[in-house]
Length: 375
Ligand SMILES: NC(=O)c1ccc[n+]([C@@H]2O[C@H](COP(=O)([O-])OP(=O)(O)OC[C@H]3O[C@@H](n4cnc5c(N)ncnc54)[C@H](O)[C@@H]3O)[C@@H](O)[C@H]2O)c1
Ligand SMILES: O=P(O)(O)OC[C@H](O)CO
Image 1 (cartoon, helix red, strand yellow):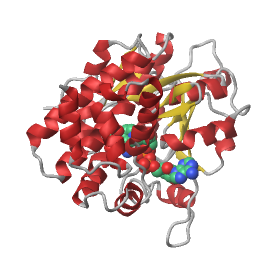
Image 2 (tube, rainbow, N blue to C red):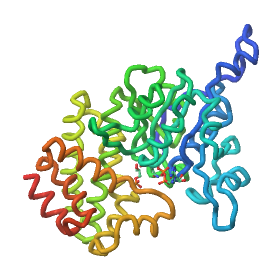
Image 3 (cartoon, rainbow, N blue to C red):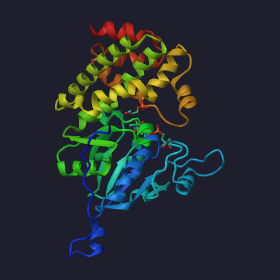
Image 4 (tube, protein in one colour):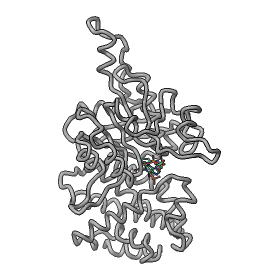
């Protein structure tokens, strides 16, 4: 039986007596999704189902598409707008007729006051650079992106990059969210992380919550975002274990030690991170689902089966058809932080994943180094 969910009640579309329909239109929030990959498209579908239902939002949801030409010569944007499907990244799923694909980034964001960022993390610096000065001060943002940047000054979470570059507040939404499952409306949970403004967090919760997508808010942006980011490194380790057919007990050991490293790394970087965050959907639940059914796990399994002789780039291109892994680059970024701070020896799973990924160690080193190193 489906669980009883606390879905926000439908709002009435009827304006108050002393309010004109023009004034109501002005106060409505308008949403743009920046990104249209596998999760980006499914996030647009979730949001679009709610903007149709809730009177405080404009029905239309803009979705910025990094334009590509499909094998039949058509532009991806044209196909999405004609068929209402992202035929490349989530084939067979109707996004909602109120989703409008737009290949022009500046045009896509110009009228919106709620921006949802959901691209692979390596593209965000370039996207932010293009948006500097193009986004108004009162705009609110949320990042669904699992990843971070490493700068001269140290690590920079993607929500911080967005906030600093664009001068806007940025929440995060992370969780056990394999997009293909949410696309077919299988039940999932997610966690919104916010800094101070609970009201804004509640607005994001309202925008994303559906009967099959249950969202909870916690006041811990860094904790939520680091959980989503670091679990991708542990998923690579879990994939190595699967590729070497080492069994479920070994995989569970790697996941346990990995979770401990996720918590230690997060708290060493940001002492404000809360222990309780690791028990939300963004924490242990996301770690489990990614290590069981995610893309990072899948490609790492193939890497180990090939004994590291085929690179991650090659396997990613062959197995994911344009979708992008985050775990390998995140392992490199985490490694940079660890070596810069002299912490490598305290993080055997994170360290070993990077060293295997770049060919310095064989895949079999994942257990030897990670488990022995953690005792
Ligand atoms: N897919 C999932 O199940 C899932 C679930 C939760 C979170 N996430 C996270 O969401 C983020 C986005 O993942 P996704 O699955 O939507 O994307 P994806 O892996 O499907 O990535 C492909 C996207 O990147 C775009 N792209 C390619 N080159 C680009 C460029 N140079 N500049 C800008 N965009 C370019 C492609 O057009 C496509 O939209 C990631 O951080 C991921 O970890 C993914
Ligand atoms: O497929 P992955 O490994 O990128 O993981 C997808 C999501 O992050 C799971 O929540």
